[in-house]
Image 1 (tube, rainbow, N blue to C red):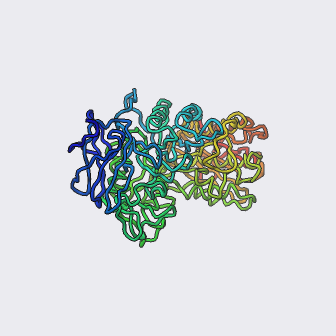
Image 2 (image 1 turned 135 degrees about the vertical axis):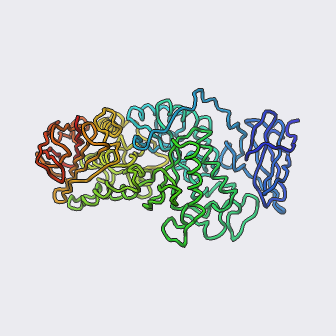
Image 3 (image 1 turned 90 degrees about the horizontal axis):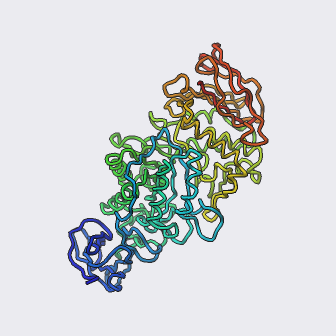
Length: 600
């Protein structure tokens, strides 16, 4: 009958579906006894049997997909009601688990999509709750986000980085307070809606990289807290450190990376996204706090178990799905984060680069031209973590950079006049740097429409700006096309090589050369003017003599009616060298503008 419990040999954690029912398995090593209750038993207890290692399991006949359930854990005199740590769906963050088949979604298409190579990636960071049609009482969801994927495809974006959509308390959040790691936020539409979103992105040749949070859990609506009743030192119990290592800036809920069952829990979560959801990569939040208690470099606070947890999962991903990408938000500028695990590294493919975003934003926000240091910008352009120029993600806006007391770049440049001339011009310089410096470029939602103020989880993207800021949208589309070499003239922007060959701190002009193999349709030279001064004929070195086309001018009138253009559409380079280059040419430079030169 429905609710009858029998022993089971089915492997797996949580609720494992079979034709005749469901096997439930949970880890609760300090429990006196464990039962499962649910709609399948009219909420009567079905006892689980003790297994080796503190696990409890039973097969419940008639328990089917869609049934709600909870575990009841005996701990001394207490009976603890707990949501399954492996629940694939929950009714809400303090509700019940919902049984789901892990293979129950029909993708309709074969699994042949592949993440683009790093040197071709253009990332768009997206917060689902505010990436929506209009201001409403409800947050955006996967369905409304699908309606905007065509915009990203037209822009040339080929990777979405999705801020965490795991179940969190309430309806609105950035997502960095996950209550249930395996469940999709119910207000976003749940698991099937997420898979629809991923399928729709893949149909448009857009990869989806998922933000995961393993540096802390919760801290609220967290059933893992003292899950089976045990704890020490007023700590969180079996899933957490129960000493000083538990402390994080977000609560004392750091997982115990040294406990095998917790390591397996986090590993299973990472692999589930890649396997069951066909996610194309993972971006790990705040990895500095997985490697070190204080998120810094104090060796006395290092968490060796956290470091080798990251290496273990990255190795497993690389062995089974090597085309997928893992990215670290480490921000300690540590080369070991992206070093191979065989060399003691954590094995990430790329990391967010603090050595780019902070100096670049500082230079662009600086009001006084004299305060802009071209040497600092040059070092930001040339910085890298290894022999791979694409081991870093570069950006001027992210969810962190445009909130928490900070604002959108154009707002920071000129508060209250985020769409003014200075804000437009200097934020465009930032966009040019993001798409032409070596690294994986990333923009934050709405940046391509000159969104103003700052990021909040209750303030949707203003889609009317697609029309009112059509020139800025076109500029981003043009830059992405050049970055991806869609016209076949700028292969150098996907190459490994860079040299900042011209640094003029007096005039605030800088030029750098990008190339892959070199030569026509490969060599690219970017010339940038960081001052409010026009140059009609500025001399700069070029890699070869001959005709060079101005394939991009950030002051072009098509980008805004206030812009007038920097100068001629092409220049002739002669053999008299400059800046250590064999040739040189005179180019036009408008105030606070950049041009990109290429040879056809």
